[in-house]
Amino acid sequence: MNVIRVAIAGFGGVGRATANLLLARRDRYRQVHGAEIRLVAVCGSRSGLADADGLEAERLDALEPGLSGPAFIEASGADILIEAGPSDFRTGGPGLAYIRSSLSAGRDAIVISKGALVHSGPELLALARSSGALLKLSGAAAAALPTIDLLDHSLKGCEVLEIEGILNATTNYLLDAMMNQNLGFDEALAHAQAGGFAEADPRNDTEGWDTASKLILIANFGLDAALTMDDLVVEGIQSVTAQDIEAWRKQSLVPKLVGSLIRTDRATRATVGIRTYPPTDPLAHVSGKNKAIRITTDAMGETIAIGSGTEPLATAAAALKDLEHILTTRAAQATSGKGGEE
Ligand SMILES: NC(=O)c1ccc[n+]([C@@H]2O[C@H](COP(=O)([O-])OP(=O)(O)OC[C@H]3O[C@@H](n4cnc5c(N)ncnc54)[C@H](OP(=O)(O)O)[C@@H]3O)[C@@H](O)[C@H]2O)c1
Image (tube, rainbow, N blue to C red; front, side, top):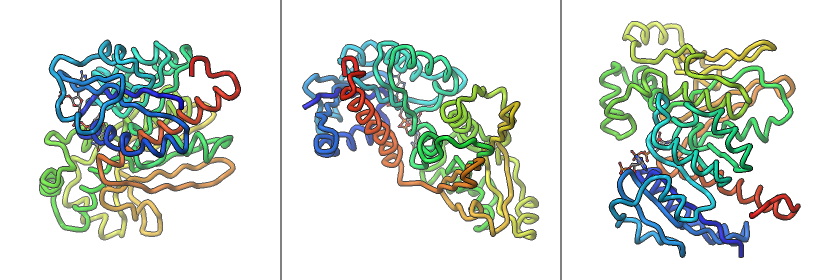
């Protein structure tokens, strides 16, 4: 059986959920892919654990101090990196060094944090192309909601004319609560924070940056665009007033924070801001913590996907969907003699 070694850098809620799901699915990987998956290393910012024979779930609560960093992951002999550290699109975050190190050595990377991909996407893509490594990012590009997969597979060959995405669950929940539960912005935010689905510092979500980051990833990795944050006009929901809510209610309009991309022959125009929809529009019915994407193409008209899932399991599952695509690709390459060491 083909042994595939996996390492996880970033071991918070999502990293741990990914490790546990990976270990729970090992029988599936054996049966479906003929692959023996071993989790050979995990690490947080200051501690980690490695074992070339594979870590079991019960050992993952006892990380050892001092074991962290790209060199530690490299030394574990991992074939595939899963990166789940903090996201920072202004600097690339700690994930950038892990991803660079993995891709430049020709090792496949599954990236869950958005920061490095937004900050240095073209560089990382070029690294992957030159080393032959695969770079996957479903977890970063709206996770349980399929986005890049739709472009890569379901709509292949079509010209994408427009994309509209409700890509951030927190802001969708907040707008929903303001419209339907008569809550002000601060009150709705306090509810979301108490429920654990808004950050203590919510500005990355409420000011639209998380939506903008996902839109950039969809554009750059799904459509081969080269957008940076400076190319986007970004507005959030933090300034929505009771008067706005009242006016939308009176007009039977439903507000959503939408990342929008319009493509013409000459350019790709991307914005993030509030759009309002009549009740006849499917996007008006994307409620609570759901996300959605509408893609308009030249030949297949409009395609809409709506999705969510309980976090962090849903994001872990999105990352492991990427793992299965990598296993399939590598197996096909090995069969056709193009797989190199795989
Ligand atoms: N939570 C979700 O539902 C969700 C959904 C989609 C995407 N994401 C993305 O997934 C990523 C992880 O989210 P999370 O909720 O798991 O965050 P989290 O609980 O804050 O975990 C972050 C982890 O990254 C580690 N880390 C920080 N600096 C590091 C470094 N230099 N090297 C290695 N590890 C480092 C932290 O280590 P310490 O514990 O030692 O500080 C921690 O283990 C984020 O980028 C987030 O945007 C999350």
